[in-house]
Image (spheres, rainbow, N blue to C red):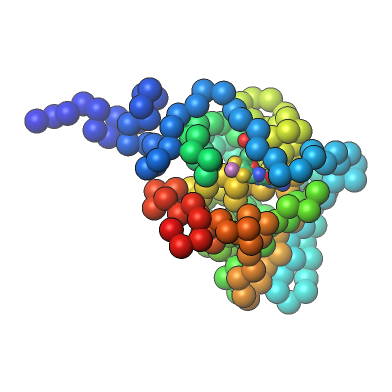
Amino acid sequence: MGIVSRGFHGKRRDGGDRLPPGQYLVEDFPVLSAGPTPRVPLERWEFAIDTEAGQTHRWSWDELMALPQETPTVDIHCVTKWSKLDTTWEGVSLDVLFEDVESAADYALIYSYGGYTTNVPVEDLLDGKAWIAHRFDGEELAPQHGGPARLVVPHLYFWKSAKWVRGIRLLNEDYPGFWETAGYHNYGDPWREQRYEGD
Ligand SMILES: Nc1nc2c(c(=O)[nH]1)N[C@H]1C(S)=C(S)[C@@H](COP(=O)(O)O)O[C@H]1N2
Ligand SMILES: [Mo]
């Protein structure tokens, strides 16, 4: 029988097959911040990729804006169990930022203005899976949601999407970040419900 809803990727109240196990849908956009919102003037803002060989690639705000921009629409899943479907961002794909970066590192430690950190395997940042986003829903990204710019890596729980992102340190060895050190799962796949260490 042709069941219409299977594979139908419209927005449904129950999320259909787009809602990972244990999650519920929200229409609002909750704010989850472990500390105060850092304020970084755009003229002093920069983003950096630091390689395992000690090289640093830097972008000013104007340089980031001059790069090719994408507008991904993605579903996001917070470990505190809310999910939000069809969130639209604008920003630069990590593929673009990694273009001239020479590295063989497997691990990345993302670091933010304000001191937050989170670790993600390098391969989870590439091939269209992650962005440095500076607009949300057609507007400038609000400071409480990570403005001026945040990482968006939507296939992992949203704590991996570092707000107020400042840079990425490439490492040969995995190094846990803020929540990973506090008992959250090292990888954080919402579809495998990897919330906490041992899940
Ligand atoms: N710098 C920083 N990034 C962060 C956090 C944080 O406390 N500081 N919280 C994380 C968590 S737990 C979640 S669920 C999302 C929340 O993003 P939002 O506040 O825009 O919903 O940001 C993630 N990125
Ligand atoms: Mo979260």
